[in-house]
Image (tube, rainbow, N blue to C red; front, side, top):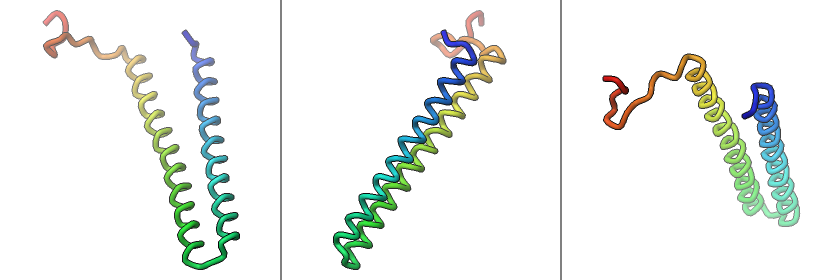
Length: 99
């Protein structure tokens, strides 16, 4: 089992790796859209390409931060539950054992 320092280092590495993947993906989408827009050079088509690229960048970035926030919240809830004793084990009928 990982100790607290190893777990924190692992989570930090995962967060930075995910952020770098999103950042490089955003840059790749932006560069591709700009290159295609420069190649086409017509108004409506360029607007459509740039709008689509902006939508893709927004979706990918917001998905990353949304998933990251949900994971952090879940991790905080689990660690708070572990520190406080966890609450009790329910049996099949929804009652605690011993009742």
